[in-house]
Length: 343
Image (tube, rainbow, N blue to C red; front, side):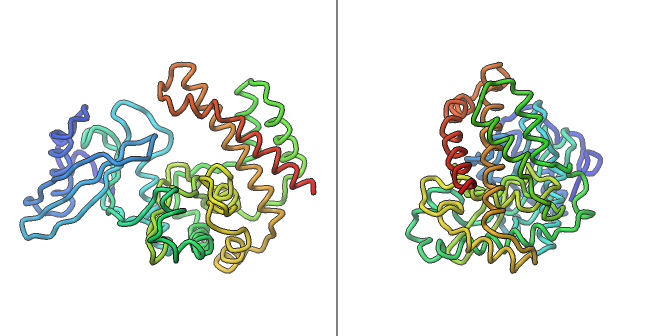
């Protein structure tokens, strides 16, 4: 539910990131939302991940003893981020209606006077999201053989979200976007240009136009031994070809040295069969391989863009600098994919 300053009062705002101030602001916002002036906030702490936005977990405690663990996701105060957290939250609500596993949204607002920046508050979902743990944790031994199929089913539900239920999303043609971004980078990258030309010359007929999660990969879902509990990080969502999500899941970078081509844990056929059954769309591994190439090029371009942001002083994160040094690894992946497509 979206709220405004008029609903909970001007004094809930703040322009700093003091945990104490943020706790007070959260307490007032949650108390308004739950119509319970006895709510108190405790155990506010930052969470790892979500590099473009700030993420915290906290406890909302009521005088009646009903305690809830929640997650706050917000823009850094004073920093403009692409996409809207309110749009993201509304999309999660639509995904929940479509049967996809997502955290339940408690409240959201783009009114910066409430917490100091746009935000969304959602339920905390217990489980494992760390990619290497998903690939190696003994507790998930029974899950891993079925995980690719479960994710195919989840994507089928995400791609069934009615477009009218996802207002605010931009429609993107990935090939056109990549060409524009590659040209703007102005770097001499023969491997990337070769991949770009192959994609342009062999572009397949679209599988339709749907909601696309945009960052559907190992690390952006929460799992437990009973299955996929939540799909998270919807900030790159847009309208486009649904196979983009499947291709992104298969990019080698997101396998984290796991043996399976799907997220490091699964086989192509497991993903394809489950998705076809859930969505009614029929395609083969050749088409999926085209999208894997397109998404691998997408990751190379994204890495170069982040490296340029570091070199230009826009973002001084060492992680962004390191991404630029690793583009050569992605170029190797592209060459391997080009060779397999020719065969």
